[in-house]
Image (cartoon, rainbow, N blue to C red; front, side):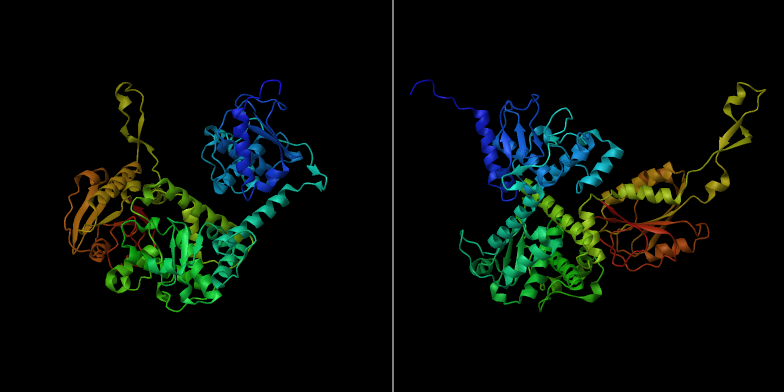
Length: 590
C-alpha cells in the first residue's frame, strides 16, 4: 500500500467518544441517531466556541476545541435539548434573551439527566425560576442579569441556535418534540421493568406482582411521586430483607434502594400506600432533618405525619398496624417528636425502622448533596405538574413542606428585623426653637432651630423580653438572640426594653437601655421552665403599656401560655417546636 498511514486525530476521537455516550443514553439516544453532527470547518467558529445547532437537526462542533468525551457529551446533549424542547423558533430568531432562557432550561434538564460533565465555562449557578421557558424569558427581560447569559455553547453572548426551517427525512418532517416524548416514555417503562424485576435480559419477562404493579402505577399515573419513584431500585429479595430485618418495607437513600418484604402479603392498594410512604421519606429529606434527635423516635414522628397525609390523599389503602393518630393532625414531624419525647420508651418500641440511615460520614459527602438535591428537584417538579393538571387533593401541610424544601429558609434574624419594622415605624424629627441649634453660637443674630424627636412619639416605643433561663436553654443562642434584639432596637429608636427572666419563678430586671441588653444582662435562675408567671408580672405591671409587644425566648419546654391577646413572637432553637400552636410568629435560632 502506497502513501503514508493516516495519523489519528485525538480531538476527533474524543468528540466521537462523547457522541457515543449520548447514543447510549435512553432519553436522548434516539435524537442523536436522527441528528447530523459536523466536526470540521464547515461552520466558522471562534476559538472559545463549542457548538451550534440548527432547526433542521445539524450540530456544528468546533473542530479546534480540545475536550474530554464527557464534556462533548454534555455539549451535544445541550444542543439536542434545544431541538427536543422546541426552542429553535423562527419568531425568536436572534433574540439573545430567548436564547439565554432556553440555555438555562437546557442546563437544568442536563443537571437532572446527568449526561456527561459540564465544561468549566458552562458551570454556573442557575437562576431560581428555570422551570418554564416563557416565564424565565419574561424574568430576564426585567432583570437582564448578565450572569445568566453564560450557558450558551457559543462564546461572546452569540446564540447557539439557528433557524433553518423544519428538519426532513425520507419519511417526512421530523418532529423532535414527539421523538423526545416517545424516548422519555420508553425510558420510563424500561426503568419500571428493571426496578420491579420484570426485565432481566432483553426479550425475557416475568409476570408483575402486586408490588411491581404498585410501583408502575406511580410512574405512569401519579406525577407527584413518579419522579422520586424513578430514582429508587426496588429490592424484593427475601434473604436481603430478612437480613436487614425489614417487616414490610424500608428505604435507604444512601443505597438508592427500597426494600420490600413479599412475605407481608399486602394487596396492591396497600403496597401503593407503603411505597408512597417510603418515597415521601426520601422526598421530604427526613434523613437530613434528623440532626441530633433519636433516630428511632424521629422515624416514628415522621411515620405519623406521612400516614395522615396519605390517608387524606386516598393513596392506596392503609395497612393494619400502621401508625396513625388523628389527634396529631396538622402537626409537623418536629412538633410530634417533641410530644413523643415525653414518652420515649413507649414510642421507641413502636418504631418500624423503615428509614435505613446511612453511615456517619454520609451526609457530609458529595454523593449525599447530589442525591438530596435530586430528591428536592423531583418532588418539586412532581408538585408543579400535580397542581397544574389538577391530579387530586394535596394536604396543605405537605405542600408547605415541599415548597419550603425548594428554597432556602429566611434567616431568623432577617425575620426578626421585619418584625421590628412592622411594629416600630421610623420617627420623624421636628424643628423646635425651644432648644437652639449648636450653630447658633457662631451666628448669634440668626435664630436657628434644632431638630429633635417629640417626647410623645418616644414614650410608647418599648416592648417586653421574657427569657427562658432554664438549664436546657443554650447560652450561645441566648447571647445571639439578645445581641440581635439590642441592635434592632437601637436602629429603630427603641431606647428602653422591659426584661424578665423566667425559670421556676420570674426575675424582673425592670427597664433597661436597649443598647446594653447584650452586654450587661446577667442571667438568673437556670432551673425549670415556667413562663406564665413572667407574663402575669408584665400584664399587671402599671408602668408597662398594654399595647407593648412581647418577645419570648424559650427552648419550648413550657406549658400553654395565656398572653391576654398581646402582640408577641417566639424565638426558639432550630429543631425544637412549641407544644401548642402559637398565634404569633416563631423565629428559629441557629
